[in-house]
Length: 260
Image 1: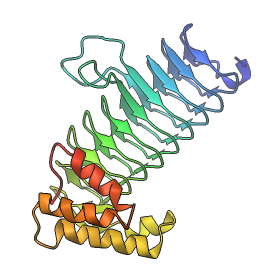
Image 2: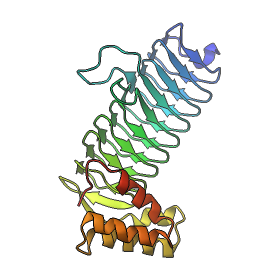
Image 3: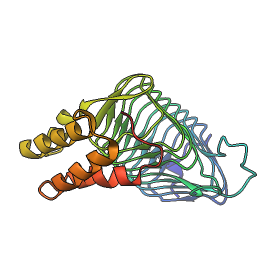
Image 4: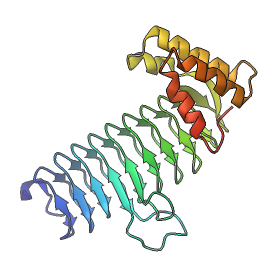
């Protein structure tokens, strides 16, 4: 540990494992059973409690609280986990809680996520890679968010919901059911409003693939089909457009039902 990278006012438990390149700002507190890997920078007045594992090259801004006990009445002090991957930006006043033994035992944030101020990620949530959470987005417990999803400011996600890859929500969206991949959702409660075509363009999807995803959206939402009928149509489309497989797989795994 290089003392020049750790502010003199920071409090670090003796059990903490820090790479020598980690930076910790003034008045931050790093509790027991925390491991922080190379290149991660922690601002001032941050609290990290363990067990928590933080990967490489994360930037955690001031006043965040990471790895504290889950807000769950069933929690009885079990040593559950928070895992944060690599290259994440975590802005001011974020709160991420550890998991519970009743579910996955850990809360997990993947890589390359952009998480803005005041975001809350509750116990047992599983976050993929390359997501964006705008200010004040909040996830209740047991929520899954897949790769490249974007949550607009003040989006609220009910417990046990799943948010598919490439989803985007509008500001103030309140979600009570699963949102399938590629869908744009808005409202209280959330309703589908087409696909995230612009996001797909930026990620290199071809014009033809986007066209086929639009057709899949119409089969699911616009053609008057039941969900089971729509699944049959999507399975056929998947044979010629592999990107539809992401949608069919999500629908087959959904347990809460989807926004419609």
